[in-house]
Length: 434
Image (cartoon, rainbow, N blue to C red; front, side):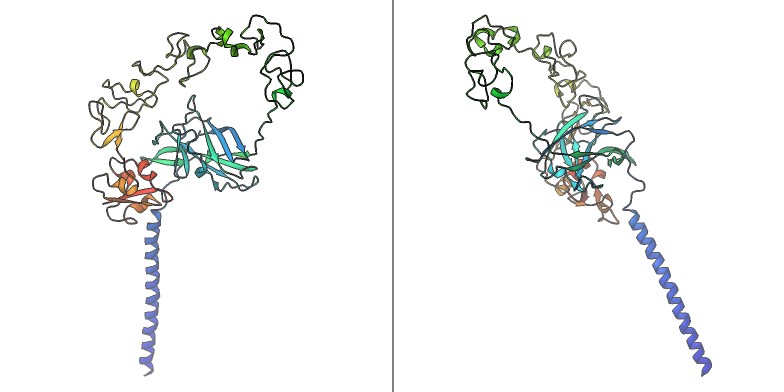
C-alpha cells in the first residue's frame, strides 16, 4: 500500500510540473504573437524632416479687444515648406504649448493660399493642396500672412512647427520638422490714439494756419478737419499742384483742386510700368525690367496671353501661356503640360482630360469628385471598391488589423491620398474596402 501511494504521489507531482511548463510555453508563444502585431503600429524608423528647414515670424500682432492675431511667416531656410502646426501655451512661462490654434484660423482671410490638413495649416497652390512644399526660400513666394481669431491670447506664447512632404520608403509622407520649431511671445497691441487735425500741430490743409484757434476752419480743438475755407486774408496766386498749399485761395490744395490741376503731371496717375510697384507680383518692377511692359507709359505689367510663359508666370497664374500643347512633356517642372510623350496620366492628345476627369489647374488631370462628400464615396469611385471608412493608422486599413481586401487610399491606383485623407478628421487615414 505504501509503495502504490508513493507512486501515485510521484505521478501527481510530475503532472503539476508538466502543467507549469505548458503554461510558460503558451505565455511565450502569446508574447511573440502580440509583439509581431504591435510592430505593425510602429514605423521602422523615425520620420525625420530634412536638415536646413527654417522659418521666421516676420511680424506678429494681436488685438486683445477683438482677439485677432495676425502672423507673417517667412521661409529663411534652404528648403521649401508645406505648412505648419501652431500651438499656444496656457501661460507665458509654460514650457509646453498645448493649445491647438489651427481651428481658430479666419477662413476668409488670405483665402486660397492655405487650407487645414491633419491639424496643421498647409500652404496651397492656386487654392488646391498638392503633396508639394510651396513656401519657397526665395521671393515672391517666401512669406505668407494668416489671421486667427482667439480671445485671451495676450501674455502667452505661440509655437510654430514647420511641416514638409518628404519621400520616405518610396512614399510621400507628411513630416513634422521639430528641429525647426520656433516660439514667439504674444502681447496686446495698443491702437494708436488719433489726434484731431485741429490739435495736431500740423497745417493739414496747407492754408498757412495751424490748429484751433488760428485756423478759421476749426470750430474747436477736437475738430477732425482743417479743410474748408481759407486762413485769414488769402491773396490769390496761380495754383501750384505739388506744393501742399492752396495758392489760388479756392479752398482746395494741389490735386484736390481739379479745376486747375486735373491735367497737371503731378496729379496724373502714373502707369503701372512707371509707378515703382510690382503690380503683377512676378518679382520684376516697371519698364524695362518687367517683360509685360512695352514702354514706361504701358498701364499694365500683366503679359498673360502673349503666348510666352515668362519667368514670372506659371500654370497657376497664366494657364493660357504656360499650357501651350506644343508636344513637349515637361516632367517634374511647375509648367507641366497635358501633352507630349508619354502623355500625363488621364490626359488625351488634344490636351483635354479623359472621361470622369477634370483639369487639376496645373496642367494635369484629376478625378472629378463633384458630389463626393466623404472617404466612403471617394473610395467608391475606384474599380474594386464600394465603400470606405477612416482609421487612426494606415495599418488598420489592411489585414491582419483591417478587413480582408481593405486597402489604404494611398495604395489605390489612381487615387489621391490627400483628397481621401482630407475627408477624415481625428482618424486621419482613409481606408477603402470592396
